[in-house]
Image (cartoon, one colour):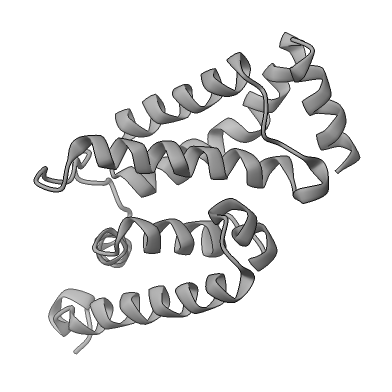
Length: 175
């Protein structure tokens, strides 16, 4: 966290090199997270750019004693993604990229099942299972108690299991 604090202090002083380190270190994973959350590469790139631009223009809110810089950044990105969804409105159809170029049918089915989760469930599953965030970090990112993280993660996994079990056996390759 000392590195986080030092990097953040340099960014607050307007150090473009420090901001570049921040962007190169966290940008690619943030974009993958947002792509999964928003269902669109273009939307993910836009939201990521907005997140980093806002941080550069007004570097405030991060406190090293409350958690990691990574958790703070992903929390800021998650909030911008939620704003993006709100602006789209409930009536809008989900934005999807061209069909994913999956190497296997199973990967395609897993992607389909995950895409059927709610935005919050997708975010939680992605951050925990793909990015490897701890429950403590998830609590910081989502700004909820750790017990709520555990219960929501359990519910998200159960929903994913339900969706997967509802997928016809022929599609899954089971015989």
